[in-house]
Image 1 (cartoon, rainbow, N blue to C red):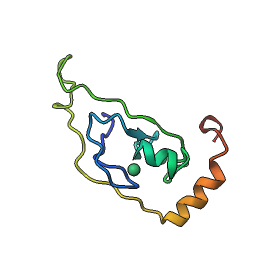
Image 2: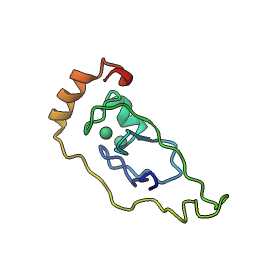
Image 3: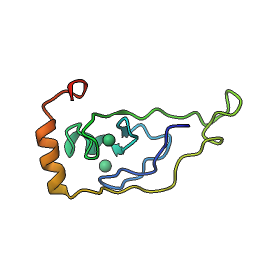
Image 4: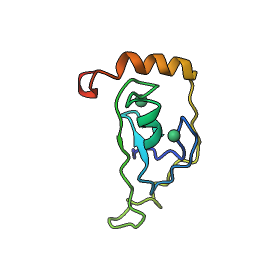
Length: 103
Ligand SMILES: [Zn+2]
Ligand SMILES: [Zn+2]
C-alpha cells in the first residue's frame, strides 16, 4: 500500500499537490503545510501528537514498472480538522516541548 498523498492542508485548507515541497506529514499521513506545522502546530500533530517530516515526492514518471504517480495517484479527498482550534492549542502546548523521538 502506498503513502496516501492528500490534496490539502488539514488546518488552512491550502492545496498541497503531489509535487509540493510545502507538504508535511506525520506517521499516520496527517497532512499539513509547512507554515501551519511551524506557526500553528509547533510540530505537534493535532490528531496523534507526533512530529512531522517533509512529504516525499512521488515520481511522475514510471522509472520502474508499476510505480509512479500515474499508477498510484494522489488522493482527491480533502481532509479537515476534527478538533476545535482551542482544543488544538491546548493539545500542542502540553506536547510541544517534548521532542518527537521522546513522545
Ligand atoms: Zn496550512
Ligand atoms: Zn498524526
